[in-house]
Length: 97
Image 1: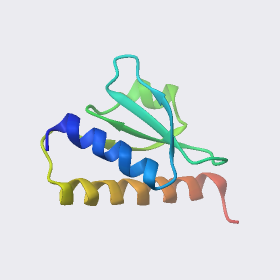
Image 2: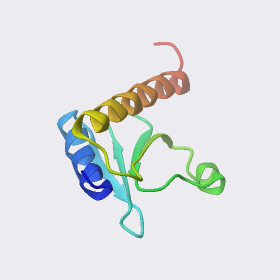
Image 3: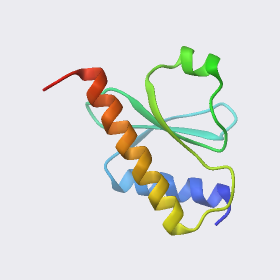
Image 4: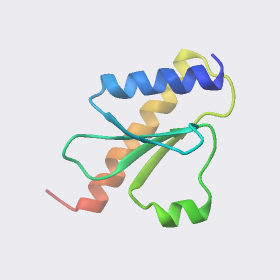
């Protein structure tokens, strides 16, 4: 699937995982998701963030960047890794339960 279709599919999969879409970049190329009642955001976009963007928005703890066509299986694999990163980084930020 094209990068745009993969991003749309990733958005649908995140919603099915219980995430809510909480924002969108000004150019419509970045989408931000969060879990209800939880800190941290997950970003889905067609470009990587710059160091300046990372400093300005530390609330984004993980990103899925899609810049080339992907199969459904490849998208799911990358999304799974992004979700794992998101959960691990949130756990590090909040400390032990």
